[in-house]
Amino acid sequence: MKKNDDRFISAIFCDDIRHEVGSKLSYMGCYQGELIVQITPVVMPKLCVSVSVSTPKERPFKSLVIRVIQDDDVELARMDIPKEDIKGITGSSQISDKTSTRINLNTVIVFSPFVIEKPTMLRLVATTEEGEITGPHILIKVAATQEVVVQPAKKSKAVKPRIIK
Image 1 (cartoon, rainbow, N blue to C red):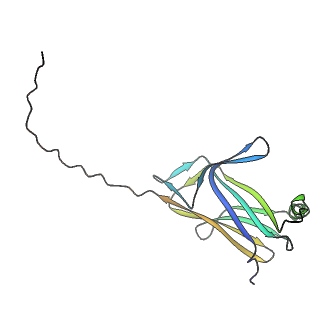
Image 2 (tube, helix red, strand yellow; image 1 turned 135 degrees about the vertical axis):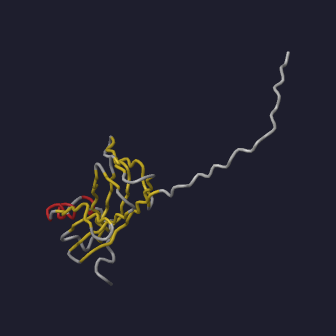
Image 3 (tube, rainbow, N blue to C red; image 1 turned 60 degrees about the horizontal axis):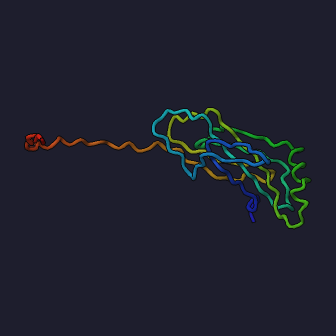
C-alpha cells in the first residue's frame, strides 16, 4: 500500500459558513465542482472552504500542512497545524469512542474578498509526515456569452382600428 492511501481530504466550497446556536454550522451557497461567473474580473465578497482531513486511528498525523493551490503552482493559503493541536485531537474524546476507526481534523479557510481574474482551478493538498494527500478541487469558469441575433420585423398589413359604440 502506498503511503497516505488510507488518508483523505474532503471539502465544501461555499459563499459563507455561519455559526449557529448549539455549535452548528450552516453552509450558504455550496458549489458542486464548479463556480461560474458572468464576467471577469469579478470580486466575490467571500469564498469559504470547509476542510476535513482524515486518518486511521492507528496512524495519527505527526505533522500536517493544508494548502489551497491555484492552477498548478500559486499557493493562495497555507495552514501549518501545530503539533500540539494534532496531539490534542489525537487525545480528544473523538477517539475515546471504541467504535471510532478514524481521526478527523476539521477547519475552515475564508478568502475575503476573493478576486477572480480569469478561469482557474483551486485544489486542496495536505502534506503529512508520509507525503502529500491530494484533495478535491473546484473549477472557476466564465459563463459562455450567447450572441443575440435580432431578425428584422416582418411587415404586416395595416389594420384599420374599429371604433365600438
